[in-house]
Length: 197
Image 1 (cartoon, rainbow, N blue to C red):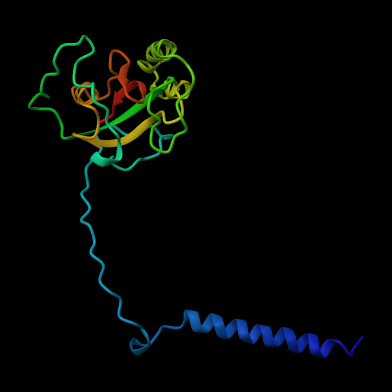
Image 2 (cartoon, rainbow, N blue to C red):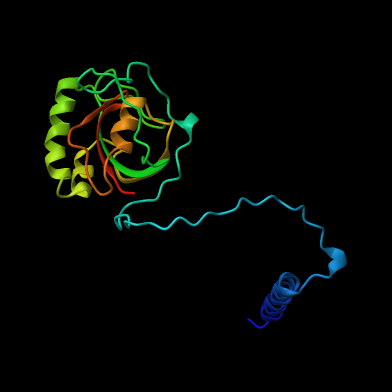
């Protein structure tokens, strides 16, 4: 039994020495001569915009949508009653933070990164949206649970020029903290929207 102990101890001792040497090497400060000069990377200035209404605790923050990130479809340049779309009021914000409950239907566009829309009819999607709208007025997060994938209590900020004109008008004229009075038809399905900020 004694014949195997010395090599095992030596092996353990050697591994310990190597481990300490590696640890010492990574923990030791490097001399200026051994450090390669790092290329200066341009840094973007961060703008601190205070939130007036905190997002729900379960909501995941989402980056700002850029104008090229969402496809648009012609035919969304009128109000739901068919009348011409007015210009946004002078006091309308340049971007808004919002939540959305989505109800897809057959033939609607799939949102980026989503599977093809569901096989429900447009009429059924509108019925489901109206049912969820009643819930959204008192508990938006609960309404989000009723929606299709892509529904979220906090979709982040969206600037002007990203959404279709009729959808943008409905969202950008909404008062902070309120839910739009009716489902909004979009190329991606019916939306129930709540403006957060």
